[in-house]
Image (tube, rainbow, N blue to C red):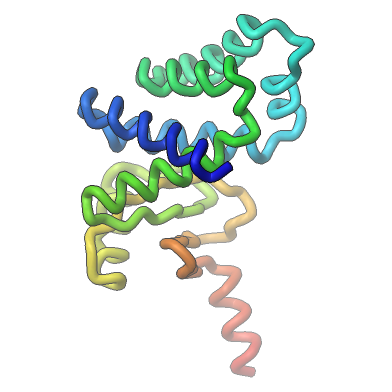
Length: 175
């Protein structure tokens, strides 16, 4: 099973490297895979063999093109849908992010915030996280309304919770 995920992730990395737009594609794939993973109805529709493949692929295209997605992202996700691997997409994307980070000697930080982060905020956050972990960090941001103020970052197994909720909990414990 993991060999199949590695195969897809490695093939995607080769394509993305040739295209030269790694950061945009990483971000798009990450967001889409989390959206599919977090929405049972969408995941079932995209993996339902009774729905014609071209209709399922159109759903992916509609999801991505509304955000002016990179054609590589659209093509890759469409291929995953066409081959019936939608349920594997989050794992494939995670492996792709790991491969990218390893080959570029960077760490990938999944950052959750209540609002969309600006490019400047992403850059400042990446610099702060890089200083904390001792190597360059690539930030992949996700809007998560459950995060109350601040951000929650995960780099590998390390979670850095800078949310207001965690700060309030720390204050409560100190009293």
